[in-house]
Image (cartoon, rainbow, N blue to C red; front, side, top):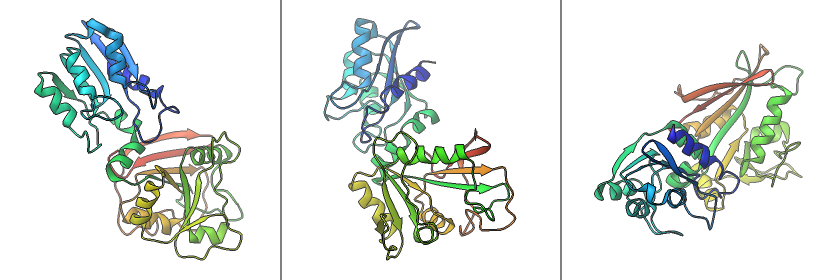
Amino acid sequence: MSLERALELAERGRGHVDDTHPLVGAVVVHDGEVVGEGWYAGHGTPHAEVTALEAAGESARGGTLYVTLEPCSHHGETPPCADAVIEAGIARVVAGVGDPNPKVDGKGFDRLRAAGVEVEVLDSLEARLQNEAWRVWISRRRPFVTYKVAMTLDGRVTVPDSRWVSGEASRRRVHELRASSDAVAVGMGTVHADDPALTARGVEAVRQPRRLAFGRGPLPAGSELELRSGKLEQELTALAEEGVRTLLLEGGPRLAASFLEAGLVDKLLVFVAPRVSGEGPGPFAALPEPLELLGLSCEPVGEDLLLTGYVHEP
C-alpha cells in the first residue's frame, strides 16, 4: 500500500516536472505508521526522498522508505539521495523500479547496501509506466514512440464512403494525444492522400506539437509539415537532441511497418470501431513477421474500444 501511495504522490509532479526528469514519490513508514511523504515538484525543488525524510525527522531512523524510483547516487542539481537516506538512518528501502539513467542504474542500490541498508526492488509495472517516456529517452537517447491507428472489427483502416473509422470520442482522444506529444508524424503516403494538418484542435493545448513527415520528398506545395528523409534511427536521435521526447505516429501500414521492423515503436494504441468495412488495407499488413505485445489493456472510448500494448518492456 505504501508504494501505491508513493505512486500517487509522484503524480502530483505531472505538469510541473519537465520531461528531462522523472516523476518520483516517496513515503517513510515507522512501526507501521506513515511519518513522512514527499514528491518531486520540478526544477529547484528537493527530491522526493529528501522531502519525505525531512517530514519524518527523527522518526525516519530505523524506518522503511518506499520510493517509486531508485534513489540517485550522483551529484547533480542536488546531493545524492542515497546519502540522505543513509544519513537519516533508514533501515530498509523498498523501490518500485531501478533507474535506467546510466549515471544511476544500480549505483544507488549498491551504495545503500554497502551502508547496511536492506534494499528490495519490486520491479513494479506501474512504476515503469509512470515514467515510460522518460525511461526510453534517458536510456536510448531517442523519443518515446507511440503508434496510433483506428480500425474496424474486421481489421481495416478505411471504411467505404466514410471519412472516419472511429467515433467522435476517439477522435477527441487523438487530439488530446497530439496536445501532449512533442511531435506528431505521418508517412508520405498519408501526406499525399489526406494532406493532414496534425494540429491539436478542440482541446486544451499549451503548445502545438511539431508536425513531421517521414519519407522521400518533396512535400506538396503549401504543406506545413517538416520533412524528415534520413534513416529512422538517425532522425529519432536528432529529434531527441532537438528536445523531442515523445513522438506520436499517425501514418499508414507502410510507416508502421518501417518503425516496427526497426524496433522503434514503444507503444501501440489501436482504436477499434464497432463497424465492419469488408474491404481495404489492414493496419499492420506490411509487417514482415508476427509481433508479441506486452501489458495489453482495453478501455471503452465512446462507442469504440481502445487497445493499448507495449512492443518493448516499459
